Each structure stands twice: as structure tokens, then as C-alpha cells.
Length: 232
Image (cartoon, rainbow, N blue to C red; front, side, top):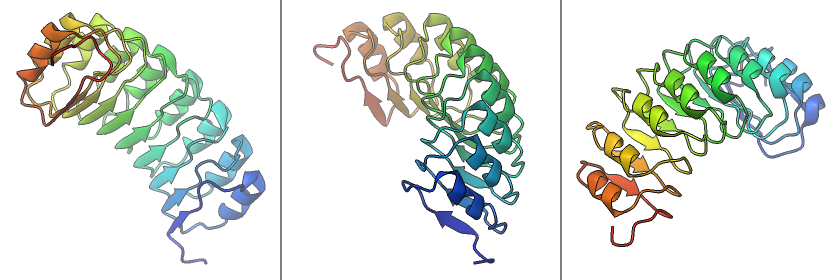
């Protein structure tokens, strides 16, 4: 198997011992080890795969120490590292991956400081920060990523100031802002995003007034489920 370039072995029980074996497959460029009970020791083994461009290590427990190892994989362009107990220190390590164009960090705890580090990843096109408590200050940092086309900021305690930052993203076509403190005023701000084609804003305080503004946009997809609309 010394010629193997792609390996998907997610949702098994590799543990760190299995990751150590995989770390010997040095020709790999794409790897999926999602949900395999890996700790930072497993991440240390994975970081030996220096040719990796795509890595899915979702739903493990590598933490900030594991993220530090992953941050050494300088060729990565696509990283999925959701649900790994990562905080701002882990985000700092990930921010060293300057070639990243796709990053999924959902269900971690990077907070506003972690978002500030991610603001350095200027090549990012797709970013998922669901449930990371980045708040308005973190949203401002994300707004520095001018190449973003897709952004998920669900459940981040974002309010008016955060939306004012996000609407400045010039290339954004897909936005998920669900489960934030969003009402009609924020809906009006979002309605000015002429390039936006897909908007998901479920579980918000938007009512008919805000929905009317959003309906005026040239959207392909609009999801206002679980809002205050009664005749949208």
C-alpha cells in the first residue's frame, strides 16, 4: 500500500494505535479518520503525512495539542476538524495553514480570539464556525476573509454589529446565520447583499417585516423556519 493516495476509514475504532499505523502511509494526499477515538497522540501520528491536502478528523478528541500537530501540515487546502474540543489556542495553530480554502471547525469553542486568528487565512472560500461563540467581535474578524463564498455562523450569539461586519464580504453567496440574535433590523442589513444566493436564518426573531425585505432579494434559497413569520 505504499502507493496509496486516498484513504477513507471514518467511523471506526482506530484509536491512537491505528493512527500510528496510518502515519506510515506517507504517500497519502487525502484522509478521512472521522470519529475514531483519536487523541492528540493520534494527531501526532497523522502529522507525519506531510503530503496531505485534504483531511477529515471530525468528531475525535484531539484538543488544542492535537490541533498544534495538524497545524504543521502545510499543504492542507481542505480541513474538517469539527467537535474536537478546540479553543482559541487550537485556532491559533490552524491559522498557520495558509493554503486552506475550506475549513470546518463547527462545534468547538474558539470564541472571538480564535476567530481573530482565523482572520489571517486569506485564501479561505468556505468556512463553518457553527457553535463557536465568536460573537460580534469574532464576526468582525471573519469579515476580513474577502474570498469567502460560503459561511456558516449558526449559534454564535451574533447581533447587529456582527451582521454589519458580515455584510461587507464581497463574494459571499451562501450564508447561514441561524440561532443568532437576529431580528428585522438585521434582516434589512442582509437584504443589501446583492450577491447572496442562499440564506438560512432559522430560529431567529425575524417577522413579516423582515421577511418582506429578504423576499425582495434575488435568492435561490431562503429558509426562515422557526421565526416569527405568519404569512411569509
